[in-house]
Length: 357
Ligand code: F6P
Image (cartoon, rainbow, N blue to C red; front, side, top):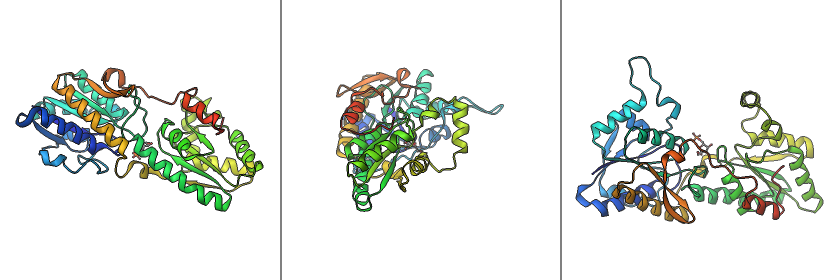
């Protein structure tokens, strides 16, 4: 049994723990009959034939190590079927590598873009099993992706720390949280850290509504306000725009990120200076939290068992706290965003938090 493994897209905590989970279970199942290959930098390595044989010992002592021992890269799905005249497409190059390397199966760890390509490979007859990775938690078909809970821990710690300085200076702070076009990370970290306002892409914000929430806190004697703002936040005006208008408006925006625009808007409306903190890629780095170590171990075992049972073309997913297979065709190309009427959003509102709308 020859199995190629790759990690693709933005990295996150738990990638190595997941690789370890798959590898350990496969070695236990197949023993000497198994050879594992590490494919370098995600699909880049598959396109360029950059892979190497791995040893069982390569998977020791990596449970708590951040990043990915295999490296990763972003290979846009759109580029997979394009090629210059007389050139092979990236898809054809990948299929060639798989054939030459005689891979019986590929184990692919990734998020949304990665799953579109994994599904494409599966549609072309490649045996594929995938694991859901992303701090954004926006992958369809699973209640939880690995990396998410570690990133929630970090974003929560950042907002916790901002509390003391915000209190001392009686200031309004914005903490900008990653998450791409989904608000999961901001919502979870915002509630966990006791933020006062949570702005997520799924609930377009009104600067006036946020200003009102800040002023209400001031009137009740609160010395500070903390806003957890998703990097993908959009205003109510922007929500009404066409895709083209939105793109043009954002290109013309004279701020490095949405948080600085919100800060300016609030400065105008409240007369307060607003400080912006952006933890950025810090949210993706370092050791996985215990919950992610557990999740990646469970997902790794389940992925290896799918391979043992020949159930290819699936992602291992969390549903009702069980690990189940979900067909790649159901996962590919769909985003899982926060339902604005979900229990968790309602809980935030019931706690008295403003969702900025
Ligand atoms: O998808 C994970 C993520 O960290 C998003 O939250 C963020 O928008 C994006 O990746 C950042 O991408 P990059 O690492 O390419 O800057």
